[in-house]
View 1 (cartoon, rainbow, N blue to C red):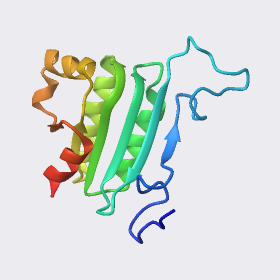
View 2 (cartoon, rainbow, N blue to C red):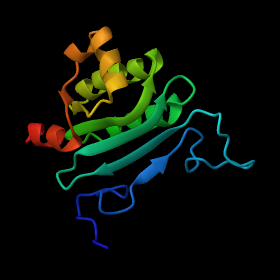
View 3 (cartoon, rainbow, N blue to C red):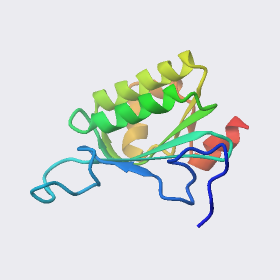
Length: 153
């Protein structure tokens, strides 16, 4: 196991265990009564690169029922003032208007905090939502997290 560089945070590099949250804040699929297969879920995983860029990977449904862990994580990341915040949407199966509003609000908060903001690898479902709402014209979209990170340099 490699040791994090001095400038990396506790949730840091992809080579270490990133921070993971689910809809309830517990590890995905667990609850006191056991997993509820009918409950929608959203996993949130974050890490920082060696250049201090923050990456937030979302997986599952991004909707009004699952929004809270993503909202609180993205708010926290913006408050850390990384030079770049990348949201990886490759694993998002569904996104409703509340999820889209979260991304738009985060974009505005990041701009106010002088944090560059990028969306990476939107799934086909998310890309279609962005196109239909024309939100694709206001976001910096990239085919992968690596591409989003490279475009910032």
